[in-house]
Structures are given as C-alpha cells and as structure tokens.
Amino acid sequence: MKVYLPTHLRSYTGQRSEVMADGSTLAELLSDLDRQYPGFRFRVINEQDLIREHIKIFINQDQARDLRTTLRPDDEIQIICALSGGS
Image (cartoon, rainbow, N blue to C red; front, side, top):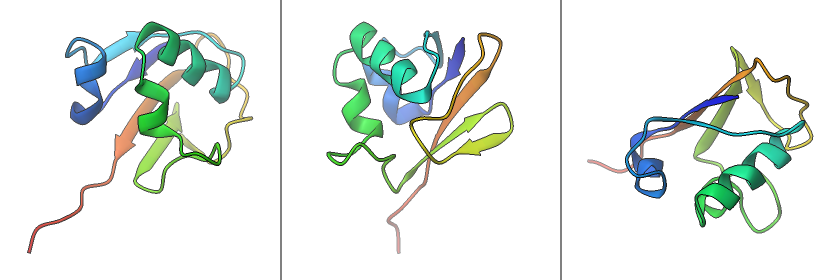
C-alpha cells in the first residue's frame, strides 16, 4: 500500500515522499518499512510499542491510535508529525 511521509522521515527513504509497504496491521506495515528503511520504525514508535506523541498516522481519512489496526491492500497511509518549538 502507499505510505506518504513527512519531510523529517524522508532521510530514511532516500528523500522519497511516498513509498510502498505491506502488512495486514499497522504494526506489520511499520515492520516492513523498517526492513526496507532501517531505523524508520523507531522514529515513529517508542520503546513501549506505542505511536510517539508527536506522530499521527492516518489510514485513509481516519486516525490510527493502535498498532493492531487492520489494513487492506488498497489503504493509503499518511504519517504526520506535529511541529514544536519556536518562540
């Protein structure tokens, strides 16, 4: 399925803004992305296997809140990062 990436994760994918990955759950999809692009998963998932606070993952138009979320082959995944900092 198609995965759209924010700018700060593109360093893992050779600057590609969209990549293809497989999985029947969100956890499997992220594992496939990590297999293709080592280090990717840790930037999205914390040590407790939870989606990092500053990351939002959307499956089609719905926000995923759990790695057990099931996926279909025609789903589109969008990973969004919250901006922080500034004054």
